[in-house]
Figure: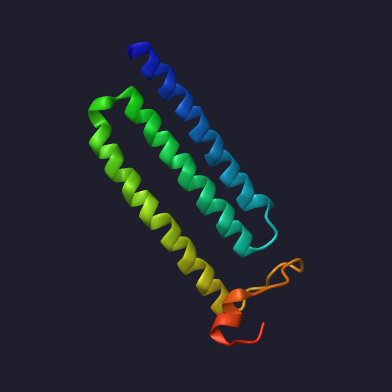
Amino acid sequence: MDSLLNLLGGLLLVAGASFLFLGGLGLVRMPDVFNRIQAGTKATTLGTLLGLAGFACLRPEWGLKLLLIGLVTLFTNPISSQVLARAAHRTRVEMTLNTTVDRLAEDTGEEA
């Protein structure tokens, strides 16, 4: 049973590290700030949660603390992403030329 938890924990850590790497790569590769925020937030949130789950498998006595860290991450990452995107939109940061629809501008009655 212990070796199964170690194997599962290792796999979860590798998956979490992969998502964290892909999130960092998305920050470099995406064309505008809005896409970068999206890539950075979603991938790193999943990567962090997978990493915490891997640590919980390797150290079951830390389970409650890791669960609380995961909950805080799960609530704060999307909220901070949304606040950053709205601030960038309000300061009229340029969108990529491929962006054809601006739903926030439509909802607030602003001109795109």
